Length: 292
Ligand code: 2HA
Ligand code: ZN
Image 1 (cartoon, rainbow, N blue to C red):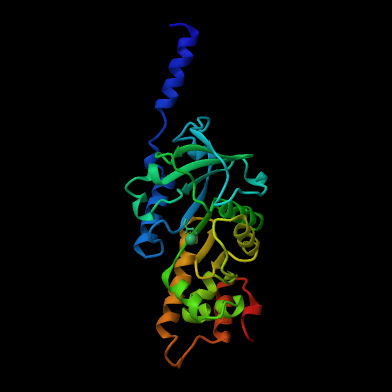
Image 2 (image 1 turned 60 degrees about the vertical axis):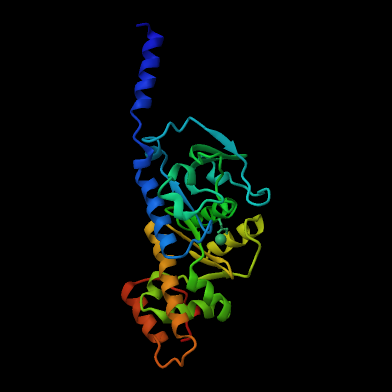
């Protein structure tokens, strides 16, 4: 066998050595999380989207990261117009536009994609098998990743969904960040410890646009949770569990609120009690969101 043949053979062997991407922990996490979110009623139809920044070396165990399947322009509903420079070369697994969370688990390769951010769009490395594209909210997601990474270099996940009670609460509670956060903190003892930074709120805005992306990412430099009024919530965190847990805790608190808001409130968690909690757990919190 000639030298060139040997190199070709070695190349084939390397290809054969890739592990099955469907067995990758990050694919499993996306499948499990979308299934959970669907089951909880947070993601009807094609509602919701997740983007999860991956480790290049880990992805390289499953895929030839030099093999770009196709290039996709970076656009939401409108052409995107923002500087992705800090994310160029970063790899994400992202839910597809128009895809249902309900269906991800049974067909991850159609409903998810692994993309690498480039200067003028994204490069598809795996997935969107039916010719699909990343979520229309990708510009918002990428802007949120950039904002969170400035605050926490470990941030990897941005998650958007439509949790029922959180949404219901938007219709009956003042949409003031301090008052809304304070009410949530009063609803479960764990709340002030889980999201001591509180909840940011944007007024109703047109989704899928640059403007909502910019506004969300501005809020994300202050909060890990941002409510899109009468639409849903954005959460950001280091891991899928942390991000899911943030949204889950807000939703639980909103559920208690919705179960109790039309009855007289006889008991509550007092602000002094909340201070005892944050002191016990040693967390920094939004002191200005309490009335001490
Ligand atoms: O992806 O939830 O906000 C569907 C949505 C848009
Ligand atoms: Zn939405």
